[in-house]
Length: 142
Image (cartoon, rainbow, N blue to C red):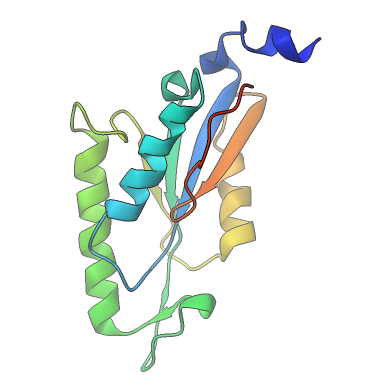
């Protein structure tokens, strides 16, 4: 199949967008995740693809160490509030996350294992993995 042929395919049946999110100091704001989701519109056809928001879990700790998924009670509350807001966005018409499936992992898995869990939920042959803070910067064709 030529690269030019890919643009004519029904992307919706071939590709799922998997957004990976985890505790962050910016929570409960959903701004970064929304910006990433909106940036998908730069790529023709991506907005029609199924979307999964996979939220990694965390471990409670006395000290916030985000690379290890350790959060204080305050940050755990902020993350839970963030997840409630994300859930609202998945049901809000006009939101870039409207129609997305939110999957919350109750234990911390870390990025790679969270991706692995997310990929196991996908029913399309291709997956675009998007971190919650990494936007598409310029258009490209699939």
